[in-house]
Amino acid sequence: MEDGRRVGFTTTIPVEILFAAEKIPVDLNNIFITSPKRERLLAKAEAIGFPKNTCGWIKGIYGVTIEEGIEEVVAVTQGDCSNTHALMEVLQMEGVRIFPFAFPYDRSRDLLALQIDKMMKHFGVTPCQVQQAKETLDRVRAKVHEIDRLSWEEGVVSGFENHYFLVSTSDMKGDWRAFEEEIDRFLSSVKNRRPQSEGVRLGYLGVPPIFTDLYDCLEGLGARVVFNEIQRQFSMPFSTEDIVEQYLLYTYPYSIFARLQDIKTEVRRRQIEGLIHYVQAFCFRQIEDIILRREIKLPILTIEGDRPSAIDARTKLRLESFVEMLQHRKQSWIYE
Ligand code: SF4
Image (cartoon, rainbow, N blue to C red; front, side, top):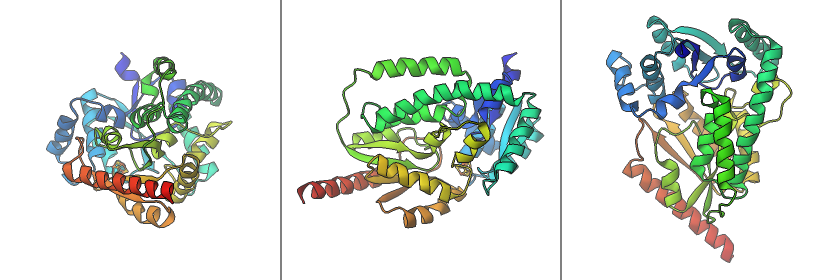
């Protein structure tokens, strides 16, 4: 019974509409990456013909949608990934119902309002119901923003914990009540924590990592991620009155320049010393590295991941050298 209520999606969408419609939202990326069968899910996609040189997330989303028996998917056709077009066609061929959603590249309020209106009609909900859902979810998001603050300002939340709670806001783990309880438990558990030792302060840019141990690895090297850029965007970090404004301020689906402005503000506010730019193998977003490097005046290390796994030896070595270089830089500032 519950299965029919589950609606998958390929990247963050106005999830308020799904909750208002009493659906169970499922961020397909999150259930893929946390699945113990993730390697099998990729193999499943490759077995039906997804090329080896297709992004691991796309293959993972395909595999998990079929494996989990998801019957309907909201596919973001503009503002995320051009591979989604072919992915949704393949899913459609497999009998999955597809609802396309497009974020307008030019950030037009009118076009976004039309998309949101179309989605509300499709799921049979009114603007008033959606506004109510927004108010509820905003309360949950505010608690996650507090977790984020505790991470960069007080140093009592690790980079991974910060990543985990922010990234989970995209679908509220399918059940906002249970998620809110989990957040409340977490917030009480960190009350008595002592701040972590002040290592090198890093920012993480790019789509969430496919590596399983990036944050642990960085902490082991004496660095801390205190800014998870896109994951923070998933949590809708701006205060907004209405849902259209909310998804207009959300930077991820629009041009890199919208993201840049947010990155520069947060880098200053969080006193970040270096940036890790994660890129996914075979992803068009790799090209945006050129713009980030030209526009941001901070050391940036670009790392690439392909399939879900622990960090490979070469990447680990590059991370080590990068953190060491930042440590030396910091020491030379202190003694200058
Ligand atoms: S990582 Fe890049 S190629 Fe892969 S799904 Fe995301 S946007 Fe598309």
